[in-house]
Figure 1 (cartoon, rainbow, N blue to C red):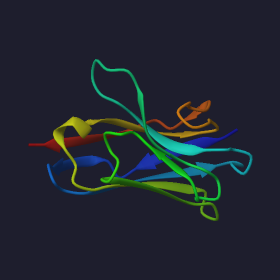
Figure 2: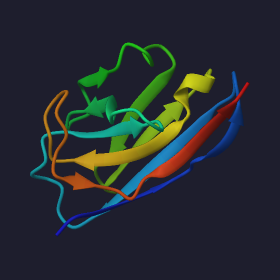
Figure 3: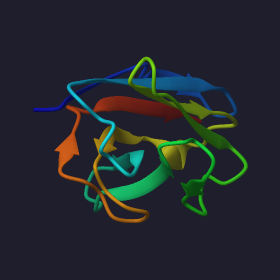
Figure 4: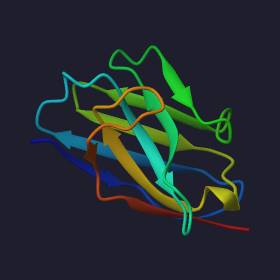
Length: 119
């Protein structure tokens, strides 16, 4: 059984920065990809960023390229999302995900953390 616990969400002004963290319990060594998805009110859940196990290759949504950076620490079983130059459109619940492939989520989800960007 794998559990994912996110932290780091909150209220931030446009142009500011925020760092999300996700810590996994249980074995994640078999997972191909870990990542972050988000869901705004009335919208479908969408991929934000994903990263391969060796942290060499990452995949980003076009809307966040150049502003967000995903990283992982396999020793700590953690994945991070550094969000810089945030925009009001980034407001959403952000979910940690494990076990998927690029552009497709895996079966394991965190409970979500709210990010609100004020203009």
